[in-house]
Length: 321
Image 1 (cartoon, helix red, strand yellow):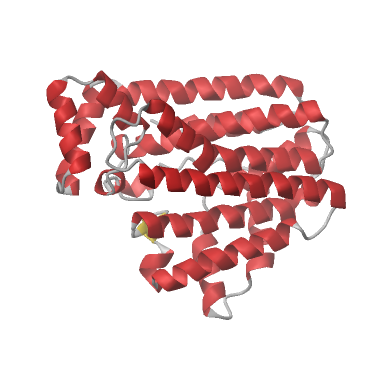
Image 2: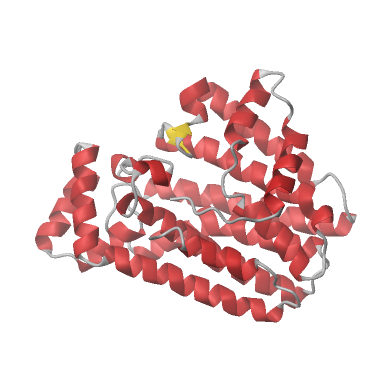
């Protein structure tokens, strides 16, 4: 489910994105535009700009960098849909589904390059370099986490800590980096950068937990992707592992069968939905997400003008009914 936060930055970010991805004059640019528009929540670039504002910076100085972060994020989604063989993204056909796998690979690579160009396009060199280093390091952690995620397929014994580590690398790392980059570009102190780093990591963890809950709380159309994707890929997520830990022997064995054998995805999803609901796993995962957001709010006390950062954090858990 997508919760739309009315934010005056959204049209500015969309306009900045269009500056860097062309007008659709060739196939590569067409894939960029299709992947970026209609835009998603634009959470990462919005957090980047608001983090700069929170320490005394301006939106105008940060917009190109923020747009670059969104390009990197969407590029990762294009590749993620190839890895997971997901035909739907944001309620529409994925880039791979529309244009082909080879074209999607090139689209992701090209959009990533456009993102780097935007991030390096201007501003005080020392601040831009520091911010870029943070984002590049986050992208490296994202790749490591996505590879680790593939290793965890079919493994219900990997444990909750292993999945939380994937969440931190796959999702929280770039959200945290967006906040850090904005603060660095805005001239933050070391202590302020550390506060927004922790804030972003906590928001990112909550975001991914809520995303993992969507197959068990909303319909496909509201989620923007297929509810059966995780079970079809035999990918254990936090709600599933929490359910496995809390389940009795019969439910555990059913989960092992679902994530280890060739079970019809629709039937598998129905059974997993029943188990994660009955065991309280959905409730527990939602509680963990809310705790992360509460802790994120506490980090804002160190900032001189946190502005809408609290509202943005709250919008993440509002995704979960």
